[in-house]
Image (tube, rainbow, N blue to C red; front, side, top):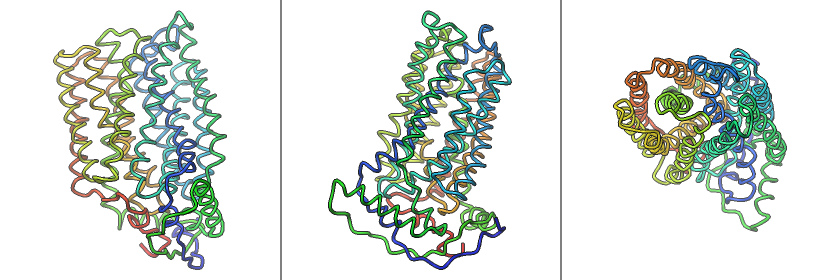
Length: 483
């Protein structure tokens, strides 16, 4: 690929973005969400199983891991996700959304299947890294595809609900561990392996569903496939009008672009670090704060339950279930307001409330004012708002940059935030839990709370009012002219 991008082709005037944005909600849109968004359900299923079995994996009849090694395994997973996001993010912008959401799912399923047969710390850590590489790539390919296919007026709530559906899988995983980790049902060294195996089998179904999802017409037209883009939009319109004869009038004006087969790193870097550098700062801060909170809290919660509240490993699923419910209900019930009240107000509010609740709950935990049940209820309240905030971070990274850099932007900011918050946090909290001091752990919770409050301030000051606006109005495509 040339340093400044391949040579531009003859200009094309298109109404494809306007035609996609004016479409009414239909079975086609529901199918796209089911085929792409269901990955988050599967991801939530197996990641929650990892969190729930963390105590079981310390048993010498399983892998015999220490708390520090369990934290390190989580860090390996996140490191793989960072690498996968960067590699597959670039490939998604270069070769299209559809090819990559097949490939990334395949990598993810290989990692899950191998995790089921791990024999020691190093094999388990390696297989979790492979799994993470797949899911990191999925974030870029799926979020960009969904945003480019959904009508602008619904994009915010849909994106939040899709990302929040991770917690439906988390709830299913928590419920499954009640059976998988019950020694009366399955041997100690078999139940956790069966959980990963089930996840791999279920993932095969998703591959079949994705056959019905088209390539993004927006990506096609900017990369020199104008006729394929027109055909794709016509087919989408045909499927939508199977239940209605009329389509709304297109509101937006035609867009003139200069397609390229590829866009070089210089052109992309000039946009990301020049014209859009303030937006880049916004995305980094939002991603970092939510990644630290989630990787610090949720993925070590099984250890907190067993170490400080003497909850048996086979019962941790009972406490993870309500946490998963709170995480899903947040985006589901609050998502509508991100399209009506607006992005800036809602993102700032959810980050502020999450940070304040976390600080208060962390102090109550350190002071011994909570038991396992009240601790869980407090976390439910935090995650109700934090889940909407985290989903909004991914939405922000996806919609505020030009189409040609969308997947790469998602992957870069996911990688930066996750590397800082996701690799360090599990290791740090694993060490703090291993020490056994509640007040040490509170210091970690306080740090996460401060990050959330800082992110809220940054959003309020430099956030983008993207609600009900087309992607091209929020960030003009690079192919539409020089940036």
